[in-house]
Image 1 (cartoon, helix red, strand yellow):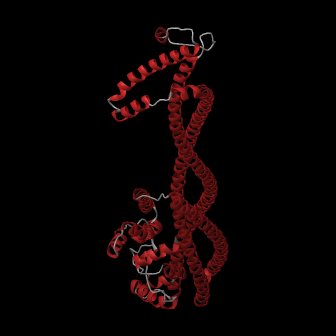
Image 2 (cartoon, rainbow, N blue to C red):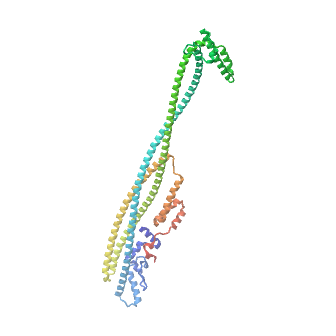
Image 3 (cartoon, one colour):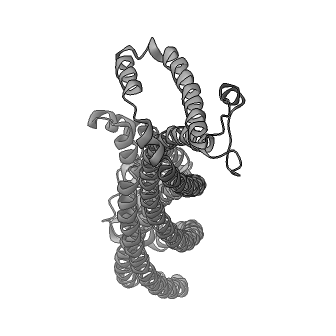
Length: 545
């Protein structure tokens, strides 16, 4: 802070403040004092010089001036007395003025150091809180990613199971359709065989004797048959009547299908003519038994096939229910994955904000380092001042030897020397305190650098983890989000540029030029257009007069 003030004073006045102070303290400016009647002593700025004249060169000027004013009537003792009184008055005025200025500078330095220490502590606490928060957020993000990976693996296994079940279901459907077609064909063949067997059974039942319990004839067949008392003839007549009726029915059925089956009519008529009634009657009973057994077997087979069909339908329903359940589980997992992805996006935005805060913290730490360098410069300047004070003490001793004639001022000179020694001791104490402050600041800067390195390592680890998760989930930052981050960072830099002190604002011009992509000429214009927020009027009001 003081280094910047001194540089400003040097730019505006063209002289170094330390040299002016030493020359004012040593009384070298008294060589240029004019003893006019309207001389002013309100400000040390009224006197200026090179600081190389001594009291020996002043005395002849005073003697000539007083001799001109008094006509040469004053003696040497009166001149020495007048000179000593004027010298004492000037020294008292300047000592009072510079004591006030030094007190003001000490108060300003204490306030600035207190503000900077409070700001550094606040930045350190904020960095610690943000580091702890970033660590917890990183652990939570890792846990969420682990859970998402577990759920994703379970979803993949469920998807594989679902695909296998769908394949089994499709295969079961194909087998069920094939078996159903086979059963339908077998059922139609069995029905045709049953109809044929029923005709044969009717013929056998009609051929049986009338007193047989299984004897049965149609009413039309009974009207065709006339009993003669001969059992064989009556049986043949009954068979003939049944066969005639069946033949008539077959002819009627044949007439019905003759239009569509004209090619088979000739073969049917040939089969009707060549039918061997005797062999058919002998084999009817055997065929009837076989057909009855086959019919029972077919019915059992149909029953078994129906049970298989029912089981297949039940398995199909269960498979459908399981497929629906798996679909619902997959849907829930997809919803959970979307929720986790939204949480991950939120964590990523918070990470970007943490990066912005980290950049701000880096700028604050850089400012603290600049302040430390300024304080080191001030310490070197204070050392130079101590050397100047040593030279001042030597000069005062020389002035004592030169001013042996002014015996009345010896006590005052001794007091001034003691005051200067006290001031030297105070400056030495201030130097010790400043060295201790610098050591504390260096220790604090080392701790902050360690914390910054730790935070950078954690942020780099988090970046790598988040990049891997982003690559796995195939989601990347959109241009709108990048623009939003750039806009927020630009807003932060502009607000900091407008509200910060002059030194920090000048340092922020480079960041502002980088964000706005300004050329070197435009950046130079921006630096030149920056209004001064501190000046000599705030620290040295008398320099404006």
